[in-house]
Length: 110
Image (cartoon, rainbow, N blue to C red; front, top):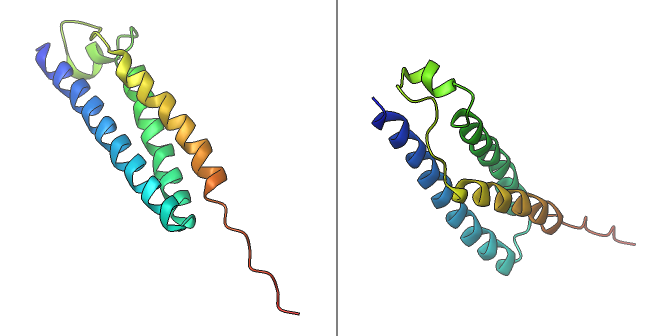
């Protein structure tokens, strides 16, 4: 039964890594095209990705959640540092997208 938690963990790591690559690519595209307002949409989605990443870190920590939720024989799945690196990159992207996504309001005509 140990295989199911491992598959779920690595699936989450893979999905979050692909999201990060996708997000950085489109953020750079929108920044280059001057479509800064779209960065705030990605910032909001990054907040959700960060919450998901932190939940995975918590769930697979040494707290007995996996043993309770999945009935696994092991209460801990070995974690990789890539998930924490992904979470920290998400934090940096959220802050960067917040500041870079601001659009100045148009000046009123005189």
